[in-house]
Amino acid sequence: MPNKPAIIVKDAVKRYGDFVALKKINLSIQDNEFFTLLGPSGCGKTTLLRMIAGFEDVTEGEIFLFGEEIDKLPPHKRPVNTVFQNYALFPHMNVRENVSFGLEMLGQSKSDAMRCAEEMLELVRLSQFASRKPAQLSGGQQQRVALARALAPQPKVLLLDEPLSALDLKLRKAMQLELKHLQRETGITFIFVTHDQEEALTMSDRIAVMSDGEIQQLGEARDIYERPRNTFVADFIGDTNLLAVKVESISGSMVQCLLKGGQRLKIAVNDKIKIGDSLHVSIRPERLFVSDVDDSRGTLRGTVKDNIFIGTDINSLLILDSGDEFRVRASNSDRGNKRIYAPGKQVFVTVEEGAARLLVD
Amino acid sequence: MGSRKYNIRAYPGFIHLTVLCLLILYLPLAIVAVYSFNNSPSIVVWEGFSWRWYLDVFIGLESAKFKLAAKNSFIIAIIAATVATVIATFSATAMIRGGRFRLRTVSFGLISLPLMVPEIVTAVATLIFFNSIGFERGVLSILLAHIAFCIPFSYLPIAARMQGIEDTYEEAAQDLYATKRQAFTKILLPLMMPGIISGFLLAFIISLDDFIITNFVKGAGVETLPTAIFGAVKQGIKPNIMAISTMLLAFSIVMVTLSYLISKSDDKT
Image (cartoon, rainbow over all chains, first blue to last red; front, side):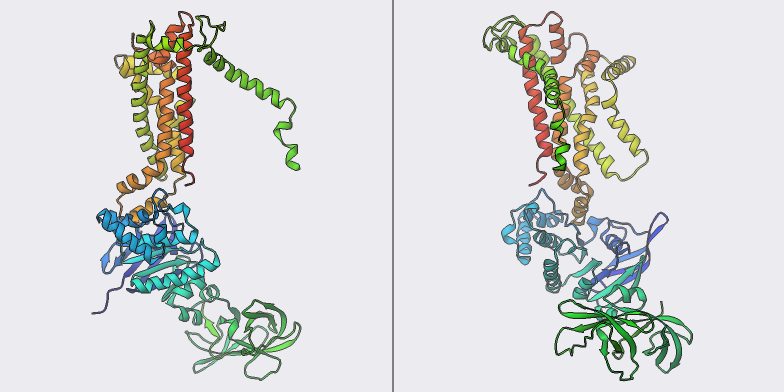
């Protein structure tokens, strides 16, 4: 028998008066999955998370937890726990009391709850701080207490509401790995909300990209990055060049597209399109090659405008003959065969095979 | 350098005006306090330091009267402050945690209005009210009146404290399997405690010191400390009144200071 999904969201709608925060969301999250809701602020990702936690009621639709409908239950009857954005550690309790709170509310004896809290604090390496008050800890330590507190009652699903946003970059990177590790170790399903696409790509098994109260695309990190379904996803995830094109001819699985300046590009088809359609093509900057010789294999012509050194890579800004701006990223290493040309130089750009992607909307 | 121009101390006459205001405010109190230690029945001629009037308050001719009045005052103040604080705590919870409801602004106005209404008006109105329902005047009528006017005093520090508590704490508690009631008693109430204690102490002092309303609604023969002092003063000011007043003043200062310190406490722990 296949495992039941940890969470099923079925036709869930959330309205505040006339304002529609979520439009008919359908979602299935597998057991033991690190699932991320990714989107800009106001896209509805936090609302969806709070609906699963029970802090927002569902206007229409249902939510199931391992097959059991939970959308009518109050928060304290749902076996899910939340790591809040500002941690919400109880300031009048010490770290150990914070972590054992959930267990005591579940009816465990004080001594059992304390023992379990100690174990959880060991897991997040904070045993020596057990008697401190939250305010006496650093941001990163508070974050780990919040994690320990949410994991202590062994929830069926752990909900994380932008938990890393208050940390500085170095600490955030470390916590990303720690979270991923913790998820593997505990085997608990994590639902993670973030607006940081890099964070989402780093940690997630699957990502749901949201905007305007809708899921724009759902899939594995690599899938979403390399095969974005629409211009929003292509633009939001990573860095990309979006060019307006017109479909000129279709032969088999290949489409010939016309750019503004009259140059042509051959691209693999992925959606239903017809001759004459105006579309966008997305090409990632790291999948382009610049050369000063025209090898006449479907190259685009342009002029170098600027080169920007960013450490690991060098970003070149080109102006294509079509007038479009074009960003090219080359690795800062000799093995990467640095193709850096001085501003003003005319160059030819080759698109890596399969790197250009046609987007219908 | 720029801020120097706006330094309030540099204004002409600032120091003099400040000293004058402080003198007008505190000199009478200081004189009463000093002369309460005067070793003389006179209230104007200083004849050396003595505790005699304090002794007189406790064992003198009028001591029985004052002791009974003090007892009434403290009993009324404790009960009135307790009841008012409980009511104020629930009102604050409803006002600040109840979300937006109709008449929320009106409700806030109704809670704090008694602070603005002239006390004499409240006093007369309360007296008329008790008379019209045939309520017998005595300790109970004083107590009810005190509960009523103590509520806003108790409400303000409690509401101020509660406003500073984010509601994610209660969400976190409910997320961790606490019922609404448990989230209130285990999380919200302890976090509100400094505000509640501060509100209680303030209400207690307001009740203890009240004269106007008490004087209107008290029955014949029932006295609180302020009405007893007023009664005694009508027959001429004696130094024992100064001793009582000084003790009441000292007690009030201690309570108000406590209230302030507690409301400020654990802002950072």
